[in-house]
Amino acid sequence: MKFTFVSNYINHHQIPVSTLLYEKLGEEYHFIQTERMEQERVEMGWNADGKSLPWLLCYYEEPGRCRELILESDIVVFGGVEDESYIIERLQSGKCVIRYSERLYREGQWKAISPRGLRKKYQDHTKYRKKDVWLLCSGAYVASDFHIVRAYPGKMFKWGYFTETKRYDIDSLLAGKPGMSGKPVEILFAGRFLPLKHPEYGLLLAQRFLEKKIPFHLTMVGGGELEEKLKKDAARWGLEEYVTFTGYQKPQEVRAYMERADIFLMTSNYLEGWGAVINEAMNSGCSVIADAKIGAVPFLLEHEKSGMVYRDGSLEEFLEYGERLAQDRQLRERLGKNAYDTIIRYWNPQFAAESLLRFAEGIMEGRQAVNESGPLSRALVISPRKGYAYTRRNTVI
Image (cartoon, rainbow, N blue to C red; front, side):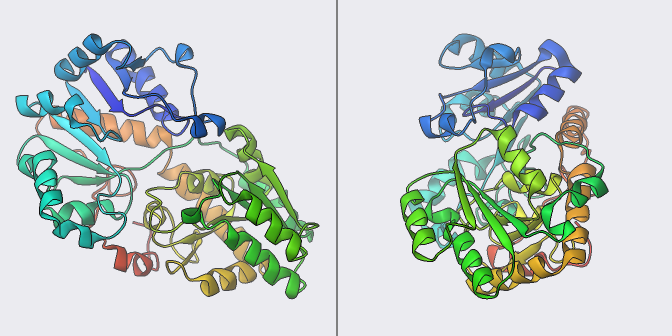
C-alpha cells in the first residue's frame, strides 16, 4: 500500500504516528510538508530535524515528486492545509482521499449562514459527500460543523493528535508527585500566554489558594504577549514566592514538569481546536482541569472520572474544581490513574497508527474497518452547546 500524508508541516505531535506508519510500510510511506513552520513555533521546540526523518518530503523543495505521490498513492491523508490546490487533482480523479480537519466554525456556527462561505464549503467538501472521501475529526465538535454543511454523512470518525506516549508504573509516578506526600500541591500551566489560552486563570487560582491558606506552587511554562502582564499581576498580588515563570521549554522538558505536577490547567477557550498538551498531561498522571469547549476534551475526558471539566469560560466553576482537587488526594489519584489509562488504551500513537492502517485497508477492500472506542470510532454529532453535558456521560465513548 502506497500511503501519503499531506499537511502544513511536521511537528512533535505528528512524528510518533508517522514513525510507526513508516515502520509498517517502509518506503511506501511519505509525509509531505507544504510550508515552513512559523518562527514562534520553532522557538517553542516544535520543529523537527527533517534529515533524521527518511519519510519526510517538502513540497516547496520537490514539487514534482510530491505532486506525483499525491496523485499515485493508494491512500492520501490530507489536512491542516487551507490551499486545496494540493489535493484538487486527486479529488477530481475520484481516487480515495481521507481528510482530517479541526473545526470549520470555531468562532461560532452562525458563520455557516454566509452564502460565500457556504459556496466555498460546497466546493471543498459537500460536493464530495457521495465520493470516496472520508473525514477524520480532530476534535469533538468537528462532526457538528461538517454536519451543518451536509458533508460526509456516515463517513466521519474520531481522530486527534497523538503525542509520544510513555509507559510508567502509574502507582510510583503518582506517589512521586508532591501533593501525594503531604507537600504543597504542584500546579502546572504549559502553553502560549495568549488571550485564548487564559493563562491568567492560573494566577487567579493561586490567589484563591493563598487567600484560603491552601499550600501550593504554580509553574507557568511558556511565553507570549501576556507574559509581562502576568508577571506584574503575580508581583502585585503577592504571588512571587508561589509562582515560577520558566519561559518556553523544549517538549521533553515540559514533560518532566508534567511528571511532577499534581494538577494540570487547560484553560483555553472555544478557539482551541485540540490542545495536545492534554494528551501529555493525562499520560503523565496529572489531574486535568479543562474547559468543555476545547476540541480534545469531550473525546478524552469524562468529568470526575478522568478529569474535571468546567463550563466554557466559567471562572467560578474552574476555581471550585481547583480548590476541590487541591484538598482531595484520593480524587487526584483516581483521576490521574484513569487519565493515564485513557491514553494507554486508546489515545496513543500505536493504537492510532494501527487503526488508520486497518481503516485504509478496509477502504481499499470496499468495507469500513472502524473501532468501537477511541481513534477511528464513529464521531457523533456533538454541538458545542452540548459538549459540557457530554463530558458528564456515564461511560467513556
